[in-house]
Structures are given as C-alpha cells and as structure tokens.
Length: 518
Image 1 (tube, helix red, strand yellow):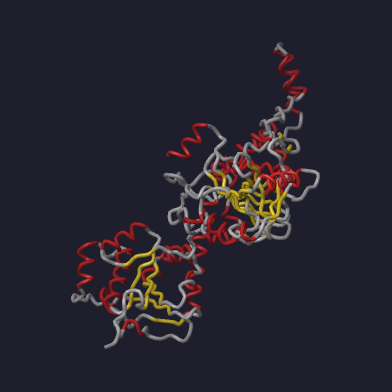
Image 2 (cartoon, one colour; image 1 turned 90 degrees about the vertical axis):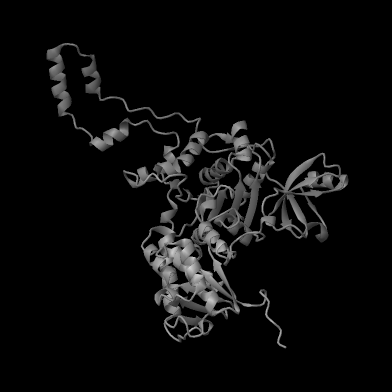
C-alpha cells in the first residue's frame, strides 16, 4: 500500500499577494523549487501602481518587465491545474520551481458546484473587490489540486485574517525577516580575571582564546569587565580574539569647527562616536529608542570629519524616508525646499544645537539716505530726501527680502554646499563619492530601498542608517522586516561595517519614560 503524503511533504503552491511583489520585486527567485501562483487580479493591481512615484512605481514596473521576460517563450499549460484554468500559463523558473498565472474558472464560468466559492461569496459578499478575488483564486487552487499544499503569502494583516477565517493557510513573506532572537539585548559582556582586566586597561587592548570569542562578530562593541563585574570598559572586537579599547575617553569631547564641543554622555555614545570616527568602517547601522542621541551624535561627528583639518569628506548628505505619521496632510504648497521643510525640520533642530554658540547675523544696515530720511522732521526737507532716495538703485524684491532675513548660525553649511538635505525620493541614479550619507528613520525603508541607498555609495563615502525598529510607520513593514534591521543582519560581521544598539535615553526624563512605557 503506497505511503500517504502528509501535510509536511506535500508539494507547495505559494499564492503571492500584490504587496509581496511590491515589497520585494526579486521575490520570484526566493521560493526555491516550489510552485508560485500569481492570480491575474494581482497583475491588474500592479498595473495601477506602475505610475506611482518613487520605489513603489519602480517595483511595479520591474515586476512587469520580469514577468514579460519569463513568459516570452517556452510556455505551457500548468499541469497542477489538471486542465482547469486553461487560459492560465506556466513557466519553469531558474530556481527549479514553476510560476503560473491563474485565471479562476469558477468565477469566469460562474461554476455553482464549487462549495468553497459558494462559502466565499456568502462570507465576503462583495466579490468585485480585488482581495476577495485573490482569495477566490486560493480556494480554486485548493479544490483543483487537493494533493498540493496551497499557501497564501501576504503582508496585508486584514487579508491574512480573512484567509485564516476562511480556513486557508496563510503566511507572511519571511525571506527578509530577522529572527527576534537576534534583535535587542544591547552589548554583550566579556568577563576577564583581574590580571587580564588590568592588562586591558594598560595596553588599551587584550587578546583572548577563540572559545571566548566564537559568539562575536567583527567590529562588535562589547563591555569588558573584571571578575567581580564591579568595573567595566567598552571595547571593540577586531577579530581573531583581539579586543581594542575605544579612541575617546568618557571625559574627552570633540569640538566641531565653528560649533560646540560635544561630549559622549554615556558608553553607548562613546561606541557610536568610535565607529563614526573610524574611516575604515564604511557602513554603520544604529538602532535605538527615541532620545538616545543617535541623530545628534552622528551629525556632529559627520561635520567634524568634513569641516576639520583632516577634511576626510567633502560633504554631509542628510535624508529620511517621506512617511506620514497619522493622517496625510495632502499636497504641500511652495517650492521643493518648502515642501520638504516639515520632513527635514529635525535636522535643522540638531544643527541649531550644534552651532548654538555662533552669533546670528543681524539684518543689514539701512541705506544712508534712508537713515537720513528717518531723522528729518520738516515736510519740505523730507520730500527732497525722498526724491534723492528714489534715485538710488534698488535691489530686486526677492534679494531685498532675503537680505532682511536673519541668518541661521548654521547657514554657511548650506551656502558652501557642505551639507545637503534632500528627500529619499531623489537618491536613485546618483553616485555619491567622498560623502557621509546619514539616513534617519531608516526603519521606514524596505529592504529593497535600503539596498538602493547603500549601492549609491561611491569610493571614499560612508553611510549611516539610524532608527528605532519598534517605531515603524510604513504599512507593510514591522520590527523584523524593515530595511534597517535587514541591512544590519545581512552585513554584520564584515570588516567595513559596524552595528550598534543604543538603549539609554538622554533627551529628558519624560522622553525616556514615554519611549519605555507608551
């Protein structure tokens, strides 16, 4: 008697929702040798997104191009459908799997014999909605291929709940998710005996055996403690059992040229400053709750290396994803700078702090004739003075308005092109050399967007991704699948990258309390 297949070893058919394809345009190559099914309704939804601005439109267009290339030749009727859904097409994938486009015969022909479709129609009522029709395709595949395990893959929580309520098997897209076991926890602690600890302090480093360092990766920051744990010092693991003390001491600050002197407020900030000042590290990912000083310290160290005597970099490029919190305010009026102002205001706040010791430039002195006019009280003399003033050359209105505005203490950074603040939307296609690239709120990037940004870096550049993985504002991302944690996990352990986690709030007691408890 032949052995019956269990659910575990059944052939799998993964039905991909639209949001999965938009989230990762290369997902077709990441399901190994399994069968992938794309309902024709998904193609319709992708078509509506192809003209969307930014990464969303790019992803939709890329998926269309890839599908067109796949279905350009060697087409066949999907054997999985056993003659049903005859208008659907299939194509073998390079991974060893198969891709099929599904047209649901039950809906097209109005088949009344399908119990699954009847139940679906009775439950969801409106079968004209795209989500309902995609769910109907999952039901269709389950009924025509009962020996297969049909799984809906979606990042839409509502869609997932509907599928589960209907008794369907539903999964999230897991390829770019990070295991929660690998997240958080802060810095590891390496305990030494008192003799080794003293040697570490004296020599600014120590070498340990491989069995003591096998759980560490290169450029990981740790705490070195004595045998009792009473004293500790931060250090960086350089590989091959070598630990190195940090460049900056806890009482040593760095003065930004024309700005303030900034001191690390705790060991975590010392670690971040150590990584930022190391020109051999080309990529830094820094996770931390609100108020830990991630952005301020990063911008300060970036400006120090740009304005300082060594002049390691030519400019600082600062950006953040344009993601709304709460209700969308709609289209903003004004020039590009005015439209971006609400999004990049936090950067200006940090620059205000860093250059708070500079005097604000006052408005220009009035024209000599105007000053004389203001002192005249006689009407006849006043008319003559006004006539002379009228003959004086006048600046253009825009120039006059600009001259009368008080200048910010950090304005010189923008006047000389030392600092650029732009939206993430405009990064594609650029090649940034000799630049420090700071991306704040990087938890709102998709893994694909993070890859796009990092791949823009040319020779001599450094990129820093900052954010709080637990404050994701993007609809289809979470703490384990956003671009910040994805980049950190995929690149950690390489010689030119470093990852840090900041846990100690320094903004205020209230901000720290809110970050922990709200």
